[in-house]
Length: 104
Image 1 (cartoon, one colour):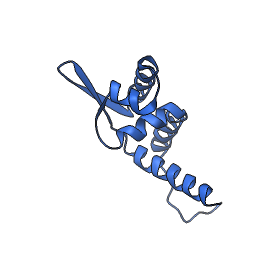
Image 2 (cartoon, rainbow, N blue to C red):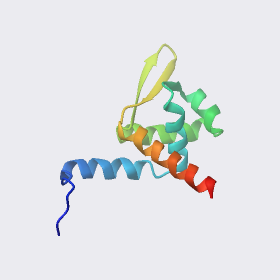
Image 3 (cartoon, one colour):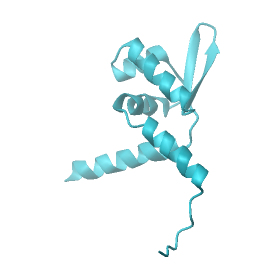
């Protein structure tokens, strides 16, 4: 089989699959949507997503474990931010697909 596109390295495919699997949850996507604008605290994310603090913390733990987000402490506050560059592209793709579906 011939293809004109360059072959993607195996390690990159593995990392990409890991990120995509991790993002396969609506609440995680909603939290990442909130983090697109910059750092947010758990309480800000909780308000944005309209869910409990426990639910936000659980999903942030999963995202941190997969190195999709990271955090920093500033006094009593912990701020979360996106660290995985693929997230912006994935969210843009989701938005584009949603926009196209809404046009029909």
